[in-house]
Image (tube, rainbow, N blue to C red; front, side, top):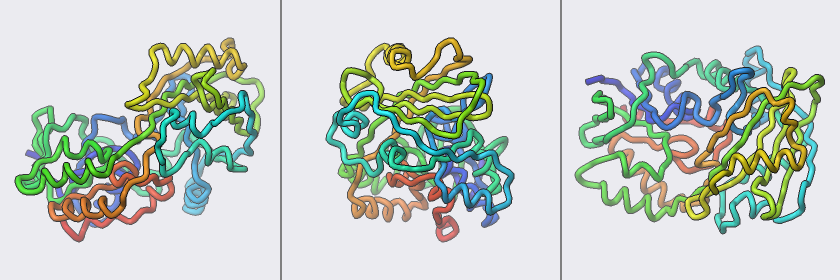
Length: 341
């Protein structure tokens, strides 16, 4: 049995934020995660050159916060060049031709920006800002069997039990009823989560890193708006003496990823000259399962949140609260832990 003041489900930016608040309050904490590696969506891939596994740009406010804090950084801000490979309803294609009202369409937002900022070390900067890192004894890698909210005990698949006074849940909200248990309100929790009609669009990304003799100062975004091609957005980012290219396609539970999607994206990338295979030194494939999330009834969520608070449980972060925050908001969003601990 491990005893802590605050147990944190997750290891992404929201979990790091929760850990920093717990530390500032002098509370002991432990994070548990099995779904994502450390950093969540800001995790990195690559052996030759380390870079973000999925396309993600840094909000200008966060860039200013990092630089205003005196942290030495390698963040680069680029002008944006837009190219249309094929005209078509690009917004509908990004949503997989589904009628989902998403909170934010990040791809469209990027197309509308004049400047986009990128760094592959954003996780380290966030940890420096928050003065905490989920490494070593502050995190354990395991699946969760069950979380008993009545007794404040989390049972892990590796046999470890964690007794906690406060639970911060940052995993996707639709998974919550699967993991928690309480004698009185479990059916009500499941009912409320069901009524929220949580829906999302996932992104399959083929990324590659190419050696370039000359690097530029622009991010190039290519869009393909028809069904003639699998990909809807391609993004090329020059960094150091390399060029990072992301080729993305959307999928969902009702429109699953087609077999051979990666090979298809490779073929289309070569066809449209988005990549030069002779220069590629490495490529990776990743899935961002909850890339775009739908709008929900906030009153229903507030009712759910109030019930959970009675059990010393806080849903928190982009997916825990089902609110599509950007990174800056996640880093600065207030979270009240001490009121219930």
